[in-house]
Length: 633
Image (cartoon, rainbow, N blue to C red; front, top):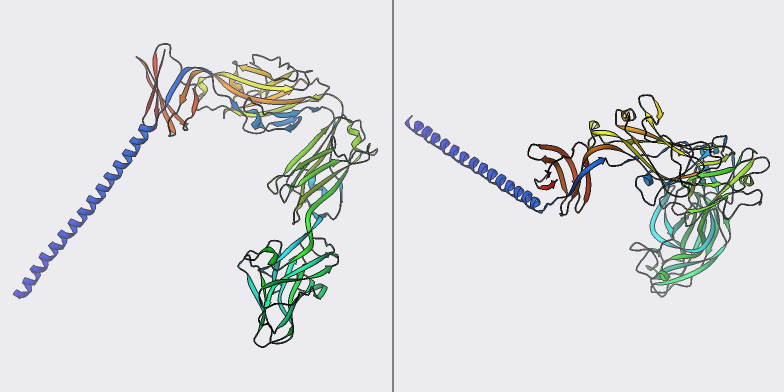
């Protein structure tokens, strides 16, 4: 009994010892965590202090701002009347050498016609789609396949890559030279006879004919003993995609010279007759054999392919094979129109190609000259996009003798030709073809676009009006031009409250600035989401078609605010979070969120900060806590 009590007391003292150890260990862990956090915090603070020291922002000047920044178009102009000839809305957001060009269109009948038929030229193939698919520009294509229009004697090399046809494995003949580590085929020379080494194929995809030529077939090989006599030759077939033979071209041809006991390249020739391809899914098959005429037990004959360590002249290959080097697609589109006395004609084509950099020729038939033009009116040439499947629109405006491009019944035709030096066929994808005519009469023009005022930098209660500026050039000064703005209160375009309602009379062939101020009832022109819809329209009295070039078109708010010229000369980007206006009686903070990149100088306009009359300080506070100060007055 006493022994048991002693043991229990010892156990109790042991438990106290374990508890003490656990407490000590937990204390050490807490100390490590606390010290680590202190070190990390200290590092972060040091990093922040370093960036703060390196950061610099300066205020170059503070002046009164009577207008906000210009707000330009964010999307393309809507053509209500007229035609866009070149450029985009992006060319109208700054005063520079780029501009967007438009053209007036007659207010009378415009004839719009699309193709009703097509004629294939050469061996061009129609792949898919119909003429109804090219009546609208909607990515529904009429597709045509190119054909080989020029051939070049080329070399195809025996490679180690394989392909499976109907469960059987074939090696590939390819235009590129050896590109693997090389493989060797061997045949038993213990008995005489003809021994198969390897079956090779070359695809006929995109090939309509293989012209007659003299092939030279090169064999890299050797025999295993000087008492063995052997040479190489081939059989040639047309193999169908289902594995069956479509045609036997030749057997036991292109005999090589006798093999030697060391690696050497021998050759033999074969006169290939023209072969018209029946199905582009077929293959040319070349089966390589060795013919043993004197045998020796336990000896072999070897044939090596796809070895890049060999000079090109020593690699196994076939030369003199006439293969396509240029592909052409050509299609003639036909249509009908009317026989009225046209004043102008516009023909347009939107197309894409499945390859890059195709040489394109577009021709509109001239019935007066009885031929397709090779330059000038009725002729367009260009190189297609460097990106495959890129839609491109080409159009031409003809005012000189537009009726030459139809016959007495109103029929017309367009020829499209695409040519590229390549070894693979490509497709022409037609999306839209249009033949558009205009009669004499009054020409009109009308475009609209939406503009947005930034109410964060220009709160609506700080705006006193609107200004619009149009910089434009015209090819005819016979009429005036008018700016109008959509009135959200009356639901119509209006010029009520404009300082100028008489329009702009342009000077011919020079840039004209047409400026409008709206200080009365201007809020009627600003929608609930701060957008402004502006219309540019001609006077509507011109009988000659006018070209309009727009260099700049924008709107801004009339304000009584402050302009800050800020500069960041430091090597870090700077974010401004606040602006303080301070004098003896005012101490006002304005929130900001402005980022200046390294070395950037910007003008920052605030409609909600009004210039004071007496002397005061302007402070700019950065995200890192730096302050720039400028004294005004």
